[in-house]
Length: 214
Picture (tube, rainbow, N blue to C red):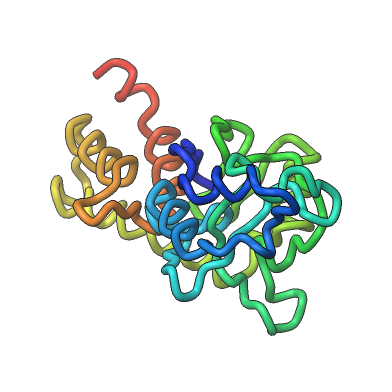
């Protein structure tokens, strides 16, 4: 997951919330809401970080509507999520689709997410038992496809940096910082790189000493 900094909510959502008998189902401007959510998340899923588009995304309620009716129009509770293999067997689903109406401990909104870690082989985990349960059992973020995708992007970064200095040469601090900037910032189209946080974690962990001294 990549920490999400919420922007100002759509004016239409604020106006709708002030109406009598307003709820999420009768909110008429969900397309505008999708635009806002996608823009602030850099067009990646709030949970798995794969690329998402307006035509295929879901609007996720972090605190489920069935349990928190008062939060159904709260912009701070709304996220953009991928389809998560909806329609496929449960063991292949992930993210919001696999979560359903369950609650989770970790919140990608304005959260530093330090407990979430990534292995070089693409697996996501946490030393915190409750968060690790969320990642594996509730969100199912270690499906083989997601693991492979994260491992592939990490390997691409290693190859890119290796091409700069040669296989046996040490990577310079400037090379690493440049690669970090690529994955920390949105591109000209306002998009984050898919699975960017896995790369950020890998680079920061592997080059912690060099980055702190450089």
